[in-house]
Amino acid sequence: MAAQPVLKLYNGALMPQVGLGTWKSKAGDVEKAVYHAIKKGYRHVDCALVYGNEVEVGTGIKKAISEGICKREELWVTSKLWNTFHHEDDVMVGLTKTLNDLKLEYLDLYLIHWPTAFKRSTTNNFPKNEDGSMNYAKDDEKGTVNFLRTWPVLCKAVSEKKVRQVGLSNFNSKQIEQVMNLNLLKPHVLQVECHPYCIQKNLRDFCTKNQIAITGYSPLGSPDRPWATKDDPSLLNDPNLAKIAKRYGKSTAQVLIRWQVDHGLSVIPKSVTPSRIEQNLNVFDFKLSPDDLAKIDSFNRNWHGCVPRTTINGKLAARDEQHPSFPFGVDEEFIF
Figure 1 (cartoon, helix red, strand yellow):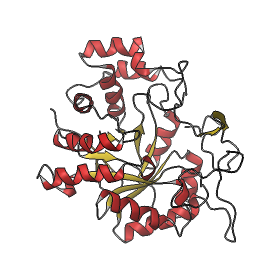
Figure 2: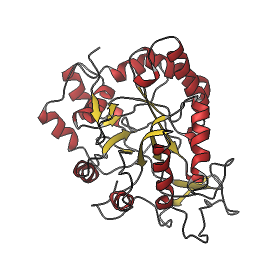
Figure 3: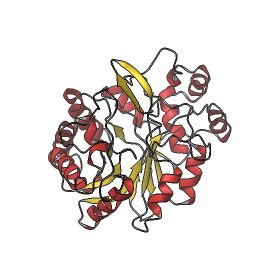
Figure 4: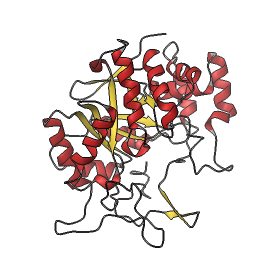
């Protein structure tokens, strides 16, 4: 397997370009998946408190380290602060839980998972109102509980050496600018949905200009997302992508991952299947031509498979546009 490239962040830190995603990975499977991934050469693991599997992820990491497969300092571990922990008094509670579950002394990267704050809770990740709608954080004596009050505590975690780098996930460029205007640490990384149906050109240009690295999640279109419908587009079944993949002697999934690498992004494909875990990392022995890269870019349709939706009485309700921090703007300049 060819050597894996890294992205150099603005502070000099080196983040491996391809990591193992753990969203939707069941607790019983993810420990083995993480261990197998590290054994086969992965050095980047992406996780989050809300995934509900960080204990098992941590066990997989610990096993690999204890067996001498790698050292802790050779790994890049990312996690995320969930929406119920946005209040400044709760940030360290969420971070401490993640560190304890992962059995780690520090994280390489800690992200605010979403810009929307839910009602404060350490036990219920999805607090609801009586009518089934999402219970968002309310105003208090200090004003709206939002990410501008959350960010300074993440920066404090860096100074306390509990976190090495900090960033954002699912934020748009206006919101990133608001964070930068605090004149604290600039976000090191932005993590967003990114794939050929959602190429994020404006957001990528914005982040390049501001020296913020991007990690693309759901690079294969997340076909196993719980709310997927038969009418949704399918990247893995796209005949045009299949033709390109055939010319390179690669799978469609490998071309999708390489597309992110060639655009200078990091990428976190998820799998618990050993053969697919290995295949997803085997993308460094080829490079897409400029023509193929441009052709794949042309497949863009600004389609997002991962948009917050509330379920009421078993049915999907309207998107959560009513929240003041809902990140999916109508202005193309700032859309995800």
